[in-house]
Length: 77
Image 1 (cartoon, helix red, strand yellow):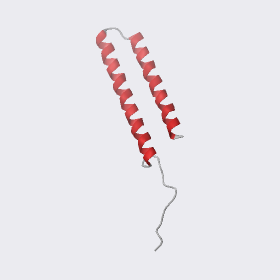
Image 2: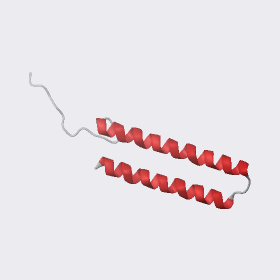
Image 3: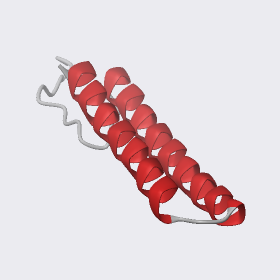
Image 4: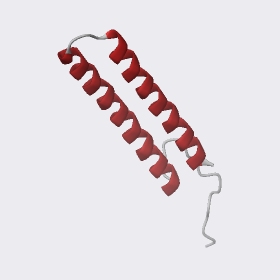
C-alpha cells in the first residue's frame, strides 16, 4: 500500500513540475529567465523526489518518521 501512495504522490509532484515548466515557458521571455526558472523547477523537483524516496525507503525498512510499533515484545525472565 505504501508503494501505491508513493507512486501517487510522486506522479502529482511530476505533474506539478511539468505544469510549472509549461507556465514558465509561456510567460517568461528571454533565455536567461528560462534558464533560471528551469533550474529552480528542477532543483525543487529533485529535492521533493529525493525526500519522498528517502521517506518511502525508511517506511519500507520500518523506521520511517510516521511509523509506530504496535506490538511490544518482552522477554520472559
